[in-house]
Image 1 (cartoon, rainbow, N blue to C red):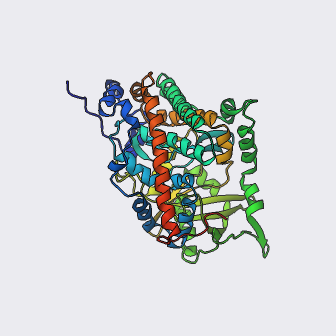
Image 2: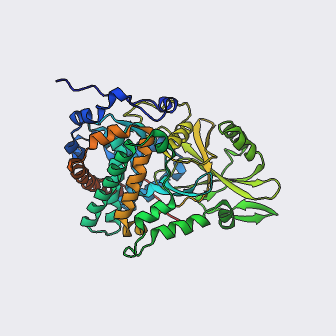
Image 3: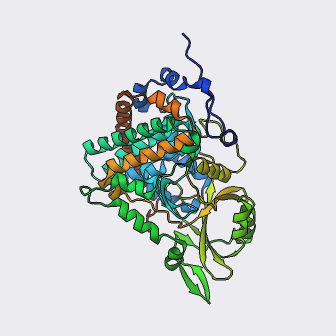
Length: 466
């Protein structure tokens, strides 16, 4: 009997236009049919000899679109450890995942779903939600690519923080089980209920809070979120200069080096206003842009042009910060359909809106010269958990993240097809455990290659962290 053909991944704009359900009722056999293309036992296969690219060359190839002055900082941050390497090496893993057969079961990929890209932020209603938080690489693609990047990250983070191998494997199992449980749950829900589902800080508390864990990660995250507001950022990041509020410099990580951009920033902001709803644009017109700096953020984003903008309300002077971050082609585009958008900032924004339960109401996009950018609010209660704290409750946190990832995939893809593919046996679980450990080993080897190149001066490097 011939294997049923799998549908081609829809474009991102097609996903937005047609709504969250990708497959029709007639295609409900797609999940089990995908097992013939990628047997569940094959999810765990990893053969370094078949990856088809050199990891260091792939990293360096990304440098052409970046600010060359900042590249040594990027290399320094990535070479610090296997974990920082993993955070910056989404392009390497994209090529590696694409070197293997995929299920063809399409969702809107987060694209960089490692464990520390799950966190808290304030919804437009100013309530704390727990969700995915980084979408630079978002693109329609096979659901398992997000799942495998997430699960492998658990092992890499565990090793970074001296968590024993048994616990690390337990975290992979917990993350997978959380994902499979909830993807099967969402498969039975009406899509409107899936679309409305939010995972709150209280839900996170239910996962990680217990007398035994001692870390109280939930309490830490909630307290941090209360402090990470525009007003809190203003106290920390600004000072008075000649009677006006100005962002404090911290060279080379935050500098007023805008000679090449100052004349176009106002035009950039006006173009951004055209990409948000009129009611939001009306709100924004109550603010004046008073200062802007170029800054360095993250690990994988280092070298991408990022501007932090300070605005003040006309009447009260209340501060608001916006981050304008360069967006380039997703690292998955060489292996999947190219983005259907002319502006990669629009790709990021619309991908985020598909994935998250409630996105920043100030999301928009713009362009500076030949560079695409997306715009978002800065310090809107967003809290990024730190590695050591997560490591202390890694199994519980992994379960919560698995829930979030399942909800994201159920919004943009077909939960029934994914649930049918994964099934209820332990085949898929044992397979992804095998992959997560094998790919953590691969990450250590790739990191060593980069660290050697830094040490012998083959590539420039500077201290990675302020």
